Length: 239
Image (cartoon, rainbow, N blue to C red):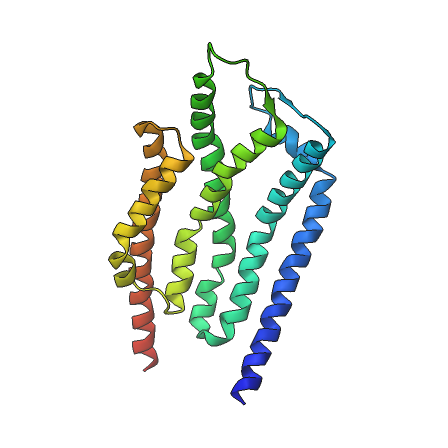
């Protein structure tokens, strides 16, 4: 009986993962043929002119831009599939509250991407360019430029999902404020390392990234505490 129950859940999980992959592939194909518009939008405010060194680099740019569009579009659908998979185990009131996860995850991802693109990337890129003044003639290839851009923006977009993930895991009873507080110093250390990797080696640029990350984590602890208290109240009312 337990084995049948387990296999049924595995089959359902597999079906939902295939649906996510199918949507990703569909949006990827659509975006691939609209890369020109995406490129114009990204480069509208850029003060550099990009070049390519061969046909393979053109294909790489198409691939990475289409992949990024597909990733951004599939996040809310993936969040819904995860919620739909676990929602039978949730209480009715928990199902309603966790349903908010879908739009919240999309909004947070967009905020993280925007923060990386409009705040962090210009500072990092500007700093790197100034290092070449009087030494090199700068020429940026499309592949290197977009690789550098997405190495900064995509991780920040994913990191900004932290409050939504904490909220969801707390609703499921997996995460607790005590656990987050216990490992706070290790998380802070990881944040310091991440901010140092993503930004130039100066304190101001690093603080631009580190402070929002710390605020995200602290707000996530507060959110975790609030959700846990809410779960406790719901349990008392049910009893």
